[in-house]
Image 1 (cartoon, rainbow, N blue to C red):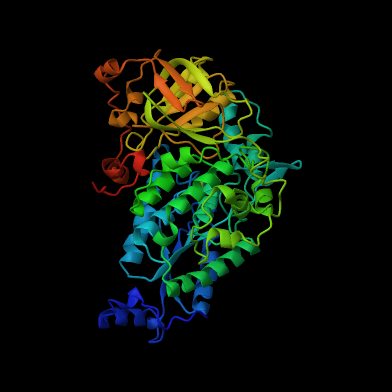
Image 2 (cartoon, helix red, strand yellow):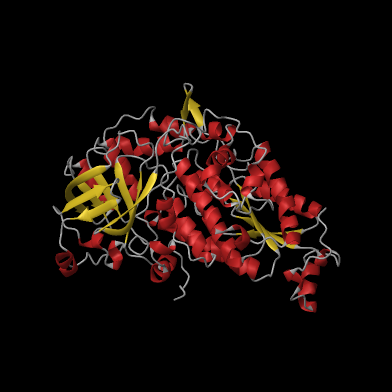
Length: 557
Ligand code: FES
């Protein structure tokens, strides 16, 4: 048990008789009141397989916290998840849910003056929501990686939810799925956890470990496996010790830690969504850190592991090969080994005695799978920043493109034009009004357009440009997403007209439109936003631009 005798506990700071009366009524003894009170952040939900196992994990965590000398309090938060709670409003509630999670944590953990928190982090928006809350509250925090779902098989071939999703879109455009879609849907998800593959959730799980906010060797892990349960116990013991050591997130979330996270995303060819989530975390930590600039600084980092959708490696093979810890070991000469982690040691100390289990899966820096960067930031007359995911740069996808714009104000219109063969090879397809304000919350399902272009055989003969976001599963053709400023705030993407020549160059890191600045300025934007009510209308009012990661906080001058 951790020695907590000299630990200053903030939960005791406001311990009035009335507060103690309430603690007592909740079952705390006089001795318990002197123990650190730890929030167990749980987004368990019956509406998503990503969270379906977390009640059991929370139980394990609470047992272990008590054993280590702390008092756990389970705190429930919102539970956004793509396929069920993302069904309405073009998926707008998903990204908007990230900030609800951070705020949920603030209004419960901060309000109660708890001493630390352990966050069960799972579907896409929970890792950034937890990181943002940790950075904001700056109380001892550790994240437990919630694990990936076991994918299924048909005739000995792997089938996962990506196959179902791409299959259902492809069928509309005449593409033949590898198995009947209904059969794949029956077999794609065989257990709890996040989508298999290096999509946003598994990318963010690796990011969490690279930042030092999860213990080494925890990402990725199969959901609810004995290893995940052991990880949860280890993290539960560690959070009690972190309270005793007063080890806070802002000592861990340093520039070096963010550099390590950026390098990890590049090395695993992860989801582009990591960029805005890392930027939002840095803003919440009140750091003056430009993640977009850091991305360019680290752009020499090559691809070291090719997990689906980048390559054929399955997520369980990546886990068996050593996962994020092995990637960090490979990257160590290029990253910040002196970054402190939640283990209480530096990254380099954590890795000192570690041997990579699967060197054939996680390649060395001097013999990578592909040259870097797997994700690049573009700028130019069409965007002050935009993101392109390149994956393995083997020449199979174009990296230079120029063509006439074909502009769509909605996903529905764009899908119809693809189906009607209005979209032609050589076009630059522009889907706008899908940004933080226009979507709002990047709703609008830009990813669906990309899968439709692919199914229609147009992914490699067109380019796709959007101010919306893309699923972490999207890696097709030349796709430029998260164009900022977005159309709804007067960005150039809102002023492009059909036929304008658009030029994209990955080598030049540029995206330009052949229209003079004077003419662009004189043009009217679309003046269109998807209608929004309720929380989404509130989100639209207060959300900050992508340069902040899309936080809802007022910014300091
Ligand atoms: Fe939760 Fe894909 S829906 S990770």
